[in-house]
Image (cartoon, rainbow, N blue to C red; front, side, top):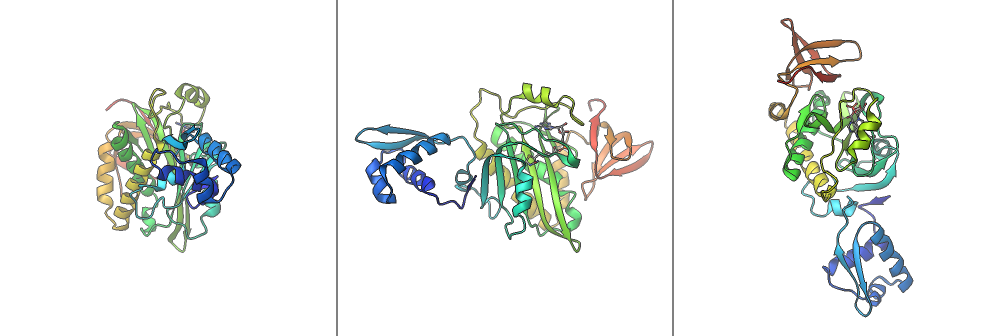
Amino acid sequence: MFSSNDDSLLLQVLKLLKSYNSEYISGQDICDKLKISRTAVWKHIKKIRSLGYKIESKQNLGYRITKSTTLPLPWEITSSLKTKQIGKTVYYFDTIDSTQNFASKISKQNNSGTVIIAQRQTSGKGRLGRKWASPAGGIWLSVILQPKFDVSYATLFPIASSLALGTAIEKILNLKPELKWPNDITINGKKVAGMLVDISIESNQIEHLILGVGINYRVDTKKLNVDLKKSEHFYGADSLLKKNQTPNPTKMIQSFLYELEQICDILDNGNVKSIIKKWTAKSSTIGKKITIDTSESKITGKAVRIDNEGALVISKNGSYHRILVGDVNYLRVR
Ligand code: BT5
């Protein structure tokens, strides 16, 4: 595990190399500056290379970084992050059971804005106890928040967060993702991202919430679709990036965290109308004939709008139904 608060020797060596801006620094200079042995320098260089950084070494000249990593490591995320609070502390795991579990373990401390990222999850979670496939190449992250906004926005929040991610995807990757109620992001009708929120409420106030975001950033879609074929409410998965595209998950995450903070600010000011308007403009759900599965029933009708709490309003035979939790199936193209 790495964290943005780390100040290990490994990071000190990396910082030193970076401060030389692709110029060489001699092994002896690294030893002298950090007061470590030549063997220790070599050991750290090896480890830094294993994190994906390209480091050239030349006799008589020393070491220099020729290429940065493509892993979303904490210090890469925090450097040049444009947020006020979200993402100032970042944890990174190569493999974890679920970033939601880790977030919930540490969420008692006063750490609003902390982000937990994993390269792989062995027990990724979907909503309502479902499984979330989390192979390498995806972006699996959780954000701990102690928001100021009213508890009545708790159900709108995940929808607003999917708007934040949709906006970031559009800006960074130049794609046109669609938002599917409640929290899915799709491309060509296939799921590329999903979110869930674990919320803790005390005396009718949000104590903290943990937003979990799963993004099929650059995953093997063939395998994913085979693995998920029989899972609940599966309608096809896609990947944002294809195999031949160079990944830059750091940029994607930075942009999402920035958009998420904008959304939180808007909710804090109570301006839900603007969120609903923007979500609706990107939504593939509104205006469609759908069937919605809730734990109690199945309703078929036309999706009309979402309300201030993020509930989906469906019209059926002249009457309106308001659904807060469910899974949508599209019946025909708009
Ligand atoms: C979601 O649930 O879409 C919420 C996904 C949240 C995952 C993140 S990853 C980081 C954080 N840590 C966690 O442990 N979880 C969060 P839901 O709407 O219930 O969708 C679940 C359904 O999506 C499954 O039943 C499958 O049909 C499908 N599914 C599972 N993995 C998928 C994937 N990688 N891509 C597309 N569809 C998937």
